[in-house]
Length: 226
Image (cartoon, rainbow, N blue to C red):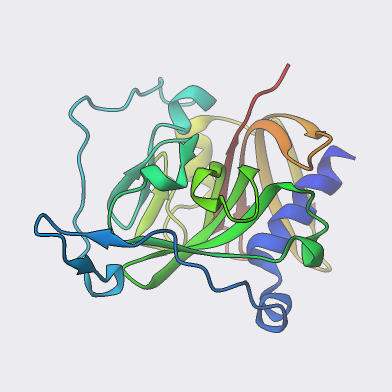
């Protein structure tokens, strides 16, 4: 059951491109931004600016997986993102398009959205505390990306290999490897499945590889587990 939930979410977020094209998300920008003079700012016309934290994120010894370290070392387009994070707390330049809950069997209180930085699609976030009309109060507990200018704890789509991942965070807790349809996924950490609101309670990292053994996409989940 846990594997089914994991792979269904991965497919919904990144793997099923044709489905995404048919079921377009609702067009909702996160907020209206203003400069110091009170003039509106269009995030799509902003320039990406890499951010470095005042305190460097923690690291773990090579060959070990620590979700507390991973969730604090997420870089999307050079921007540091640490889970969990309220959408309203993301810096200028980030916008979102929310998927219709009915299309993905999501309960009120949970959500899923495409994330954009300066107008460029960068991946998908899974949300809790997500309610109609109060989307900015939503909290991202998961991020998935397949963009080569992003990385999750140094694992970079289209760049990192199976050996890179093993050397960096060790052997996976679970491995799924099938030929047809091709699927090769490493899973690290734990999942307790969905709660009553449809939020996946998991402290987990998924890494999917293409047929050449190169990372295809990476997703990290960090939500309260018992």
